[in-house]
Image (cartoon, rainbow, N blue to C red; front, side, top):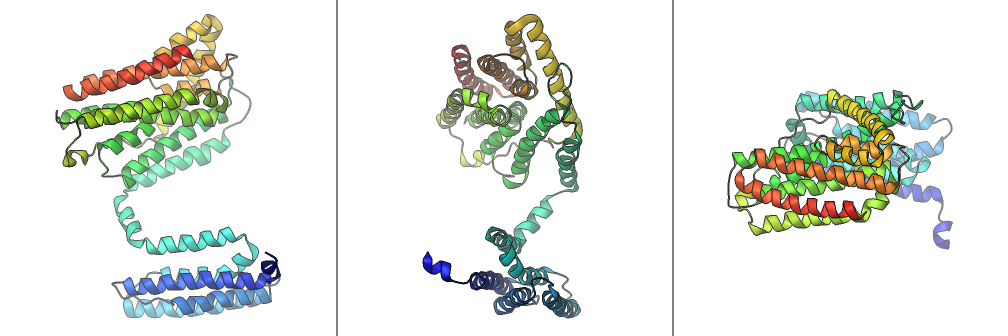
Length: 424
C-alpha cells in the first residue's frame, strides 16, 4: 500500500486513460475485421490510444483555461470531418459510429482526472456494448412498432409529469393520503406491470407457456389465468398439465408481487407477513412443479406460446386504478367507522372478486388505527377470494382437463392461505 501511495496520481490516471483508449481501439479493429461491408473506420487500436493520450495531455497542460484542450478538439473535429466526407464520397456509408467513438476517446482523459473512476468505467462499458451489439439492436428495432413508443411516452407521462406535479399536501378527506401518494402507488404498480410486459414482449417473446405464466403473474395473475385458460381450450390436449401448472405458477408470482409492494409501502407489515408469504410462495411453486411433472408436456408442446397481454400503460387504466384506490380508501374508512373489524373482514373477502391491488395498497398505506395483525388478516382474506375467482375463471374458460387440475392446485394454495389467515 505504501508503494502505491508513492506513485504520482497523474501517472495512474494516464495509465488508466491509455488502457481505456487502447481497449476501445482494439474493439474498433475487431469491428473492422468483422464488418462485411468493408466500411472504413477512422482509427483502431493505436489511433484511438493516441487520441486518448492527446486528450489527457492537453487537458493536463491547461486545466484552468482549457485552451489547449479545446484547440485539440477543434483539430480532431476537422480531421473527423475530412474523414467523414471522403467516407461518404467513396463508400456511400453514412455511419457515424467510429467518429463518435473517437470523440468519446478524446474526452476520457478529463473524465478520469476529474470524475470518480466508476463513471469512466461505465462510459467505456457502454461504448463497447453499444458498438458490439449492433446486430442485436437492429433486430430489436425491427421488432418494435410505433405503438411501443407511444407506450413509453405514456409511462413517462405517468411517472415523469403527473407524479411530480401532484400535490403532496393536504391529504384528501376520508382517505388520509395525498394526491402524490396515491399517484406514486399508480406509478409503482405500473412500473412492475410495464417491466413484465416488456420482458414478455421482447426478451421472452417465444418463451413458451410456463414463462408466460411467470411473467404474466407479475403483471396480473387474474388476467394471466384467463388468457391461459382460453389458450388451453384452443390448444386442447389431455396429454399434459402444462397450462394448469402455468396457471398455478402465475398465482405464485402474484404472492411475490404483493410482497414486493408490501415492502415498498409498508415494510413493517411486510416483515410481519414475510414468513407467511414465503410459505405461500413455496407451496405455490411446489404445487406448480408437482402438477407439471405428473404429466410432463412433449418438447414441442412446451414451446407453445400463450402471450396475450396488451399494453398495461393506458392512461385510462391508470386513472381507473387511482379512482378504485380512492374508492376503496373511502369504503374502508366508512366500514371501519360503522361496522368495525367485522365489516373489514367482509369487505376484504368481497373485493377479492374484483381487482385486489387497489384495495391491498390502500391497506398498506392507509392510517385506519387498526393493528398490523388485522391488516395482515384482511390482506390474506382478499387473496383467498381472488384465488377462488381465478378458479372460477379457469372452470369457465379452460378445457376440462386443465380446469380440473388447475382448480385442484389452486385449492391446495387457497387452503394453506386460509390456515395462515386463521392463525395470524
